[in-house]
Length: 520
Image 1 (tube, one colour):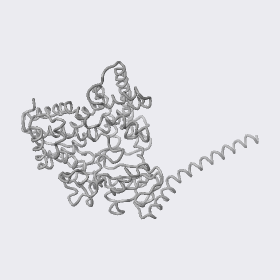
Image 2 (cartoon, one colour):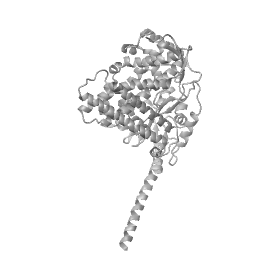
Image 3 (cartoon, one colour):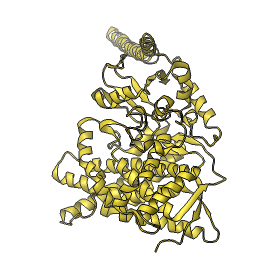
Image 4 (cartoon, helix red, strand yellow):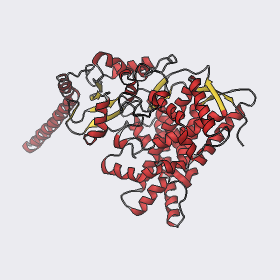
């Protein structure tokens, strides 16, 4: 009896200790640590909206975002107050560097180009990417966007040849064929009238999906395109989820959306494995790989040479490539078209350049694309005003000093790219005006600081696909300018908003007027 009583009290004590330690850990996480962090930064002159138990600044953040996106804005490029309202609001109170709490997680905003350069280049070894939201992680895959350390470096080295400009130029004949096919459909839609209204964002998404599939899958293009269509469905479901109130653990519940998402994920993985297996067998049978170096081919080649790459690695990189490549490029095409529709004087200059370099009916060659300097300036200004990624985050891997400020290990640094691109002190009084001429002397001389322009990031983790995005956008716009003039539709509502990337909340309806008969 005494022995049983002893074991009873022993178990009770152990349980009590475990419960006490758990409560203590929660207390430290949600109360003591945030208070110590606030005190640490306050002593260095850095403040922010006060931390609130459990939620941090979530209530204010959501309120500011909902108010900002509740209605369209005027036709202005001063989009910071609408897109990053929390930064715009709190910067006026606390300065450009302040603390903001996402639950018990603190983020320090850093918008000084000197400090940004330090984070991404001079002291990049002290910082790392933070873990993506679970929904985004499912979409982007476990590829270059999320990998770290030696594995990231190894994958990047393998994939890089795909994105060399000379390799991408081999895609121009195929890509121009896809563009002309799309524009032929637009021309047919305008036959019964002198103009046609097109909601361009969806068309550009489908066009980019086609070209990205060829870049990723090469000779397995048709299979790759089918997989990308499944991923597009997955993205639509994720977008639906982002519009709803976040409930912890909801993604594990068997809701209608979650069940559809699980089925799609299973089908995507099964299809990817089938394509990889088929391509690997063909490779082993001695089929010669010709044409541009595609991502799948390069990774299978490495798989055959080196066991450090697995079939699962290849599948995850294909997912990443779709998420990053398709979204970024279609996004750039959409916003640049909107800007040229808003600013007909620059549209006319770009068209004049295309007609001079390429002609009125010829398909641009790889040499022509390089010569389109005005169009290049227009793309740079589009990326400045409407960067696809409006902010990025890095986490301090260790205690580190940044600009004289002591940053504790684990602190997340939020770099508001959009705010840097719209900083009047860096870009001048015309910061919110569309002025591609500022890039006439190149990117480095466009602003008062060489690191003021970072649409594709900076340093070793700079976006590997930027050459593809620029090349495809230049090619598409040059052919479009040959064949159509265009302006904003009366139905267009200017409402830039963020849902993973910066996109037009109410779409991008554009009115197109054919300039000539379609090309033969």
